[in-house]
Length: 89
Image (cartoon, one colour):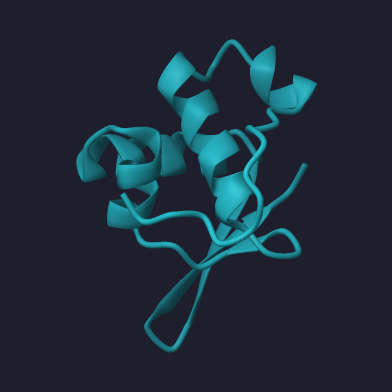
């Protein structure tokens, strides 16, 4: 696994994500992983990087990102071909 460059002390999951009954446990973990990998609320990590961090498959990450976007936890946008995951909470 690629090491996190800054000091990693854990992940933080906001209460709006934790108590959202439309999200499953993996969705919550993926949100926390994106939060760790983000800089100023924006994450440029690929599904593969997020999957490595969360110890799951790229397909599961892709599904979780869709669920998080559908539940207004993330906004997905693109600049050229670079995906940007913006944390909304």
